[in-house]
Each structure stands twice: as structure tokens, then as C-alpha cells.
Image (cartoon, rainbow, N blue to C red; front, top):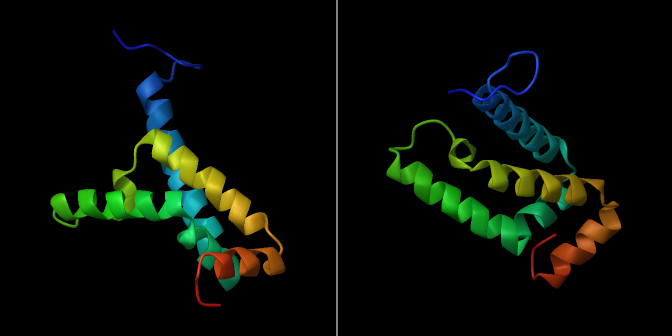
Length: 105
């Protein structure tokens, strides 16, 4: 039995579409971000751990697709939240965070 969400769209199709939307949003946010904000995002310990895990899954899958394709819905939600946060920072704050983490600016 397939559980329907709304307008007779099966729930799993909703989650597939949601995941695709989140992937695109994350990639767009990060790619279009100023360098300091992008560096602060990637230096976040949670992001670093998630990216490492995604690369391991991607490697085990024979490098098919992109690493973000192997993220769970929870991981995508977390990456999206963090991307929104870091991208919204003023450059001086992104710089300070990056320097506090020992990153290069």
C-alpha cells in the first residue's frame, strides 16, 4: 500500500523530489557564496564529518553520481540549514569563524 501525501502524489515521490530540491539548493547556495562564507561552511566540524562520510559512500558506490547523491534526507536537511546559516553571515563574521578554526583566509 502506498501512502499518499497530497494531490495523489505518493509519499515516496514527495521525498525524492524534496531531496532533489535540497541538493540543488545546497549546491547553489554554496557555489554562489563569497569565498569566506564558503570556507567557513566547509570548515564547520559537522559539515566536515558529513562530507567525509558522503565521500566514503560515494567511493564504495564506484564514484557514480556525486557525493551529495548519497546523503540521507536528514543529512540533506542539516547541510541545507548550515549552508543557509553560513551564507547569510556578513563577510567579517565568516572571516572570524574561519580564523578561529585555524583556516586560511
